[in-house]
Length: 164
Image (cartoon, rainbow, N blue to C red):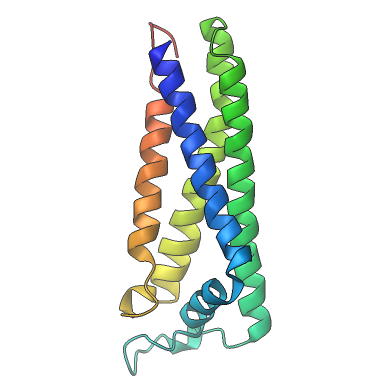
């Protein structure tokens, strides 16, 4: 029972964290929008780099990308909340029901992992060369989130009491 409570609590914590990230994007729109805008414009990458053709300078694209990230964060959060609820409801159920409840949480955690891996590390970090920026580099926070969510997912799928 302790491992089930731990797994449920950790999925809850990720759901809460993702919710706060998404809400902050709405509540402090301009600060977070400026981050996305500067990454997409590549205006603080190394001078004269040969990949500036990748830059997106259109405010329309900045807005679309910003809202895509924010919606992705909300979707991941909602899926993790759904997973938390399913896990909590199955805490005292038999192992097969708890194992089945893990699926919803696994989907939410995977969507969260994909957000930070694809949107921030691959697209932002490598395609738009965010790693070159001293000011607009979000790779460390993205890596932190990738690690947190990844560890929770790995813990979630571990067997407890001889079952999954």
